[in-house]
Image (cartoon, rainbow, N blue to C red):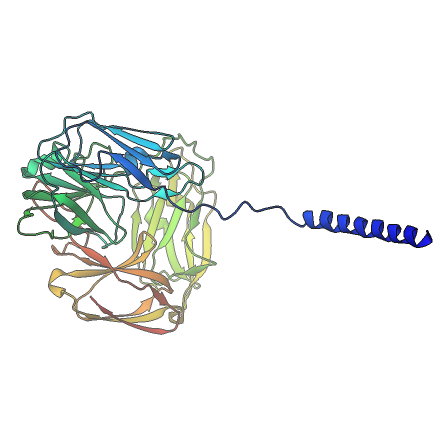
Length: 461
């Protein structure tokens, strides 16, 4: 009897531990639900079928293997030939429906590129560049045109530009109506028109500011080549160089500023050091009515005046620029007398102001020598040192070797501008006079200039 009780007790203890083990294992972790779905929607059926011939309807339906939705239809969907009235495009469950509002042209191949418009509802996976073809005639057109678009001023790529294709049209068509075909620029600046008929075409590029799909404002970035391309003999277009003929001024909201009661100024020096390559600037807090340049004096510590430099007042009448030939490593003084300036309220400087400063030494600058290969000197190239979008320095390139012993240290992007009319600035194009813009290019590697260092580079253009 005793043995039976002992055995039963051991059996119960074992069962208890087994239950604890099972319960403990159950709390180790929750199921993950499997790998995340990363697959794009798949087309399982379309009406009509892709590349349908002699299509006579006005509606297309696309059925996918999962629930889908549409995003940014206007920005993504391109239909060629371009429609006068935008078709309606809707999604419901697993189906996308497109209904034309225009009558379809006879014997014409139509292409619908959905871009990134179609994505699945659950994970947001995008069906990239889904393209569908059909024809209202007996065949699918198969000819093409390829080319490239660059920004004229620096050779950069702007993928927001659209490429417009006009079929057998006069030069005025791009300024009066929408194109026959439209496509986007790829990341490398190239573009392709596929499924074109045998005919003559003109190609343009446009950053469409107002959305009407044609060139009607000189502030729009635009590119043209008035030569026609006949797809029966060629599929390659000349490069297009885009430019804005007129730069649109930034709209700054008008805020009436109340003039301060005291007149004062600040200068552009850093820690009391004057750059040998830059002018000295005085910026006042109020607009100046009277400026007496004789009361602005640059002298040494013995009050011996320097030869008078060029003093310029800017258009805001708040900034005075003093251009001098600065000698290195000098201790100087700037004396601004009370009569030097008076604002529109009659305020003058409260006292004579004397500012002690020094000019930098030559060892605070770097030397740069650049050798160019294949550069066209007959096109009057200019070299521009860029800091972001700002031009820091501009120098003419007069030979295949360019050298400057005094360069401000820093990291610069180099732009070569071919100033063909030799006026010292970049000139945009003009479509009305058939004038192409002056062209530029950005060199592939930045230059880092170090102080008291001889920097040498070679560029093959």
